[in-house]
Structures are given as structure tokens and as C-alpha cells.
Amino acid sequence: MYIALIEPGSYLQFERPVPFSDSEGVVERGVLNEGGKISGRAQAAVRPISFEDFNRILDLGLPDEEPLLPRSDAWPEGPLENLLQEDQQPFVTDVERERVEVYSSRIIRDRIFRRIVLDAYDCRCAVTGLKFINGGGRAEVQAAHIKPVEAHGPDIITNGLALSGTAHWMFDRGLISLSDELEVLVSRQVNDVESVWNLVNRSRRANPPGNAAHRPHPTYLAWHRENSFKH
Image (tube, rainbow, N blue to C red; front, side, top):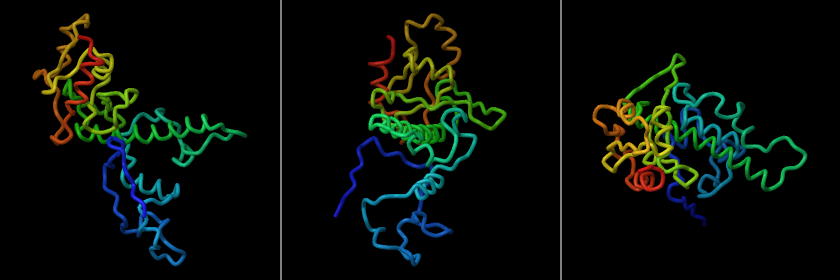
């Protein structure tokens, strides 16, 4: 008997739940035996999964819809299985292989994080209140980590904010921050405070997501004020 333990903060929820089976049959085809029947493998808590099944589940849980995807040059083009495979080289060391795996994992995590954060904020910048959609139907707003990945910040909605490019830049550089009540804080080191306030929506508070459960967590906001914000 085995049990799978998921590390807190490492679980990424799909935009859409993926059922065990749909109108086309069992989603994870690897649990079927040669006769097309569900085998005993389906009862295993931990089991290997093929690239085909992985891609099928990913596509169902994270629909590839253009408006919410990052720009096309944000990651290498091609099937997902190509991204997860090592480069075509005669020999790849363990260190190089680890870099490929980490990079591939980051691609997927960034894609999921962007989608769930933008969906939570309806593609609207939390600080400025603006919602821009370009001619190609893509939302011109970014998913910002409150506690960055480099500081082991998790890819979860409560550690994310939907921010316009300028607001994201200022937030990452500690020129603005948020109180636990989502009041916008402007650093004393800003050389043009009035212009910054002109960018902020009239309430001078960040607009919260529609679902209260997706509201930025005070723990991550406190981390940003203590470690990034330039008082």
C-alpha cells in the first residue's frame, strides 16, 4: 500500500476539473488493459503516466485559449513532450538534465499560475483598475507573485496579483506595496509620488478578486512589505 503526500503550497489547481472519464471514455488511457477494460492499476495511489495521458489531462484542465496565454515567445514552441525531453545531444550530465526538468516544470507552472490569477481578477489590474484587451484578444495584464518564486513563494492564487506592466514593475521593485487591508502603499523613495497616485484607482486600495477565498494572504503581503518594499 502507498500514500501520496503533497507538499503544502506545491499543488496547482486546474482551471477546469478533469473527470476520470468523459464522453470519449477514460481520460487516463494507461489504466486500461489490452481488452479496453479498467485494470487494477487504476486503484493504485501512485502510478506512472504516459506523455499522451499527461498532455490529455493538461489540455482538459487548462484549455489552450489564446486570450489568457502569455506571449508566444515566452517559451519554446512545439508539443509538450518535446519540452520535457532532454536536448538532442550525445550526452547530458545530471546537472544539465536537472536544468531541463526544472525549466520545463517552470513553463507549466507559470502558465497555470497566470491563468488562475487572471481568471480570479477578471483580467483587471488590481492596482489601477484597468482592463485592456489587445487586438489579438490577449489580456494586457500580468500575473505577479507577491512573494517571488526566488524566495520560495508558491504558485497559488493567494500569492498572486493581476497587475498591469507598470504596476508590476513598481511592485517587484518595492516602490509600491499593499497593507493587509489592500491599501496601496507608496515608497518614500519614489521620485514622482503624484504620478504614481494618478495611476492608482480612486479608492487607493487594490481591487480584491471576486472570490474572497482568492484574496491575497496576509502572510505573503507581510513578506513583501518587510523584504521588498522600500519604506
